[in-house]
Image 1 (tube, rainbow, N blue to C red):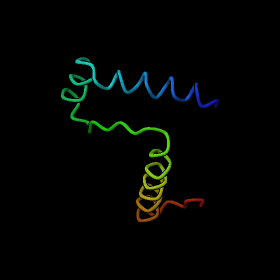
Image 2 (image 1 turned 180 degrees about the vertical axis):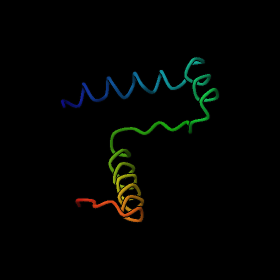
Image 3 (image 1 turned 60 degrees about the horizontal axis):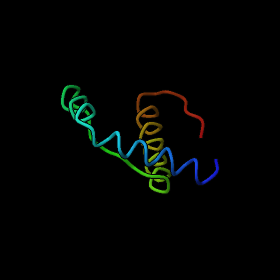
Image 4 (image 1 turned 135 degrees about the horizontal axis):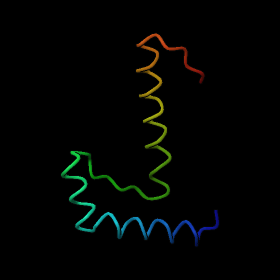
Length: 65
């Protein structure tokens, strides 16, 4: 994805994350309010994938990777 396009979407979601409706959604649904930009996403996703695979292995599910 071209950097300008990526920047556009990051900026859009950064603005949306500050809206009253998003804050209400967070509160109503008791979810964690986290917004990560580009370079911060890769390590976060890697960590989440590792955690999910570990959980699945502990549950006896065959996991690739």
